[in-house]
Image 1 (cartoon, rainbow, N blue to C red):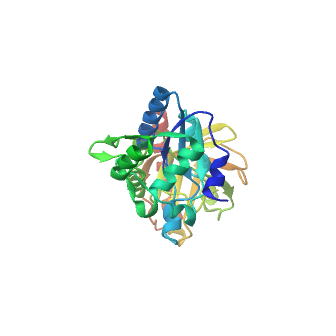
Image 2 (tube, one colour; image 1 turned 90 degrees about the vertical axis):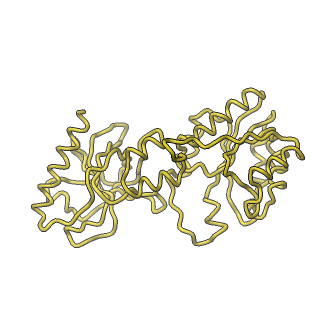
Image 3 (tube, rainbow, N blue to C red; image 1 turned 60 degrees about the horizontal axis):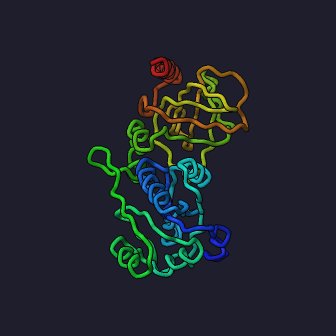
Length: 306
């Protein structure tokens, strides 16, 4: 299906203001942009819309580039709609779309979406070779008759809030920074699958979550988490790592629910990753690991009690 065909089903009855981007994470920087989008559309009596992409453009432009996401597509669309955006369009980023000039793509949006205005960040660019930067878009706005609003980055301290900054914080397990930039806890979700049963042997039966391979996983370590299953929440402790005490394994996400009893296999479990307790380490014996897990659980209980 061509880009134009994908847009056919979204033709609005009135003019529109749009913002365009991957919006991975829908973090506070994205929310700042959307706030401005909503304000402009309301002032203009227009509908508000966001164009996101089903896959990251780099996966098409630089084939083979590994990409991990902070949010999957469904979650991203849901979060954007919860902000009050009238229309969220998830386009397939194809080699055809990658060849569009900035002028041609804007022209298509004017034709199919009745584009009246565009809200972008200062480092935004679209079109082949990212030719459509802010300077180019300002010129095109005058030539093609649409409005352009360039919104400054939202900063925390001296750093712009961005998906890259969130990933950097995740890579070190700095969950307080992650939560602050997202405006919510970072989540991991997936079905509970069979593990090696090592947690049960130690007296701490864990749920092994099969997280999507495209998800961005925090640094290895032990975390205070909140587990959600069947519309109920439980305090929990989660180990992310490679089982060094038992000779190593593929990287796993194993969750111990503090106050839960029952079979979790094949159910979908979501965890809010709240705070890193410690790095993962190899212990000289399972007994030493068991002692440490007891301490981790007690620390998590105190954190939840406050």
